[in-house]
Length: 178
Image 1 (cartoon, rainbow, N blue to C red):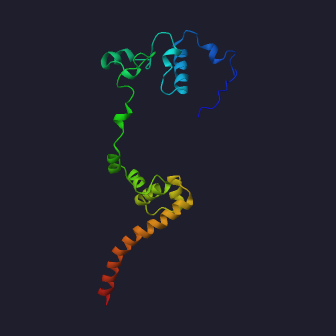
Image 2 (spheres, helix red, strand yellow):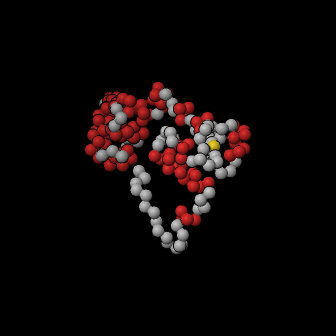
Image 3 (cartoon, helix red, strand yellow):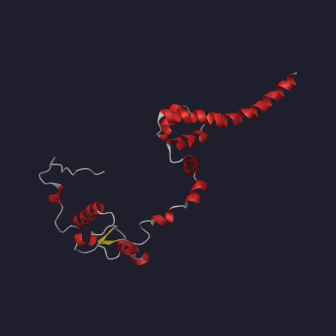
């Protein structure tokens, strides 16, 4: 996603950004850590890349947060000092599939129909049945054909339910008129 690195030449200065940052500046260590993290997502070689003093993740308040909450155990032994409770733990944030299906209408629809654009179009139709196929396609990033076919099927299933309700009223109105 990052592509190849092309270094910009000097625009209004005779010094490049690399020359402006001193060799012992902590920013160089953070850059090395970031480049290593992009190459190896599991941080296996992170400690070997940097041999200097430990660098705080937060420029301000790191010492206070570490005294108050302790250090994040995921980064213990690494050159990066990260206070606990600063970076979220993803496992605690994710709902179970059952809970997610109860709370999220689009996820429930994807469980029924499969992970398709059709499921997303169906949810959009349930929320706003007046939308045209073109608007549905734009809102759900589906193709026009998918949105049009889902709209036709939605009208067959949901429209017949609405017409049954209207049909009973219209027959009672007709009998009242006679």
